[in-house]
Length: 410
Image (cartoon, rainbow, N blue to C red):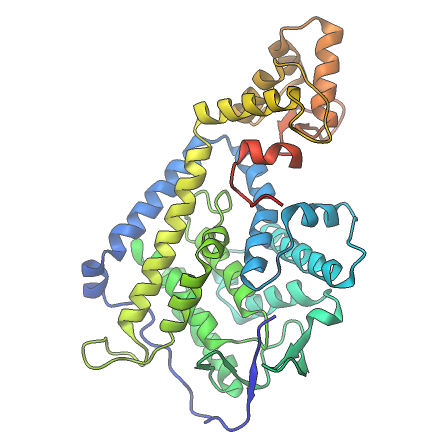
């Protein structure tokens, strides 16, 4: 929960948030264009590494990871194992932990909602969508997570889901714009950062700049960080940044949380003299912020790209099977070594027909059927019906082998 200090006597004058993106000359000399191009190319390379079905499986899995890291940035350290337990209906007996599990589930539901909506740039870049995004996140959360507190911990307000703030606030050293100006600012924000306003690398640079400007406006009494990161993810997807969702920007931001908060705060700075651009805010600080965001995204793309190299994934699947047989994986039994071959081919192809899966075992009929049944029962392969193809999956007991260091150990 963000800590806000209520401001009673702010000016009603509209506060501009120029520059919207750095000038063309500054972009070229700063290296932002090169980094934007590198990110686009690496994201495309990552998308080309994996089957579309496997990509969908990873994206669905990463929604829990995204929820974990985005909420971690805001102080909710609910581990993915606890989030998955909540997905199964297994909530903590401690009210505070249970509430935080609910918050994590809300983040996942919003991601599901965004994907189901299939929103395009025209929809995304509208105040109505941003209000709906906030409403989808907060509408079903428990009262404890809707209380707005001041620095002393006193409750001063209650969050209303899907409503722009109706109070003036200060967050850290930042005096957010007058609440009466928020609707106009958000309308301007949506028009300014619509992807159609720019071409090429400027789309990506603008999307990263928009992340700060959204937080600077601080349109909601609470939830601006979470909604801002969800909005940025959605913007990146709308501009065609391939493989978004396979990699997780929030993971990178959480791992560099001190730097993330520092560059966000610095980008709030007003212009520092005539050599610092022509806007109301510091152009050099915005450049530093965008540079940090591009670096962070590129780091996460390369992390996933390294994990999804076919030879490396084959080694990790084999290591997982070996660890089971060495009794190093809790909650599951030993398994035939040939299971690694079945799982690796399922990863490469996305799914296998039942006859393919049976043939890959190289085992007699009954033995092959028992092995495939075991893989289904343990969530390593999934099915939509008793005759459907078998799809590669990522059960919790295999995650740390398939994707080492994706999340911290408990």
